[in-house]
Length: 307
Figure: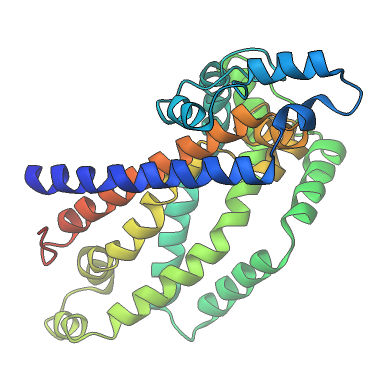
């Protein structure tokens, strides 16, 4: 296992450097003069030179690439502070929403998938399938606005939008976005895992277990669930890096000061250091999660060999 991890991590380094290089070149091709895009047309040439110096654009291209590669980004042009300080402050807010959504939605998806697959062709299966497809079909913006009006404006159970520090105040503001996000995420996962469970239920080992008198619940939880963990691991682990970036539309509508809102603002204001830092962080985390996925394959399924 240790030797496999070392090899995979060494192979990941060129991939990460390639992502960093391609991203850097795309930023330089698309925005040839980020200082002018950020400052606007009314800035004088002296002011533009000062901005270029602050963004390190007056240095050679190879030196700009080396600086960004070793994560010594210039300060954010809008916030006037280190991009890593911004990420350290904004990321916990996004994680406070995305982590509960991730685990609650995953649990509900697996439970509903096992429940509907074990009752294929029956009324519960049709009802769950109908509501999951309905939830997948409704645009997220409509659900967000409707939930704000119903639970925040009409019933006044939760704040319509906003955020506050402190554990209990944060829960009060985070409750509605979490509930809405879970509702949005249940549909696709339930449909996908239901199909996977149905494929496993039709295998010979399930029929053999039932023929020996093993109860249906034990078959699902002991045998079937373990054999469907490969697609579960694939979907969940590779989704982890994107939890830190938050949900762009959700954070904007509910006025949550997380990474999603900061990324949208950085794109609108041409704050290139912030955008590049978020892209690089997500890319590195994604590559590391791919390595972890291979390791978890061997853990959940002994038939998988790490070579």
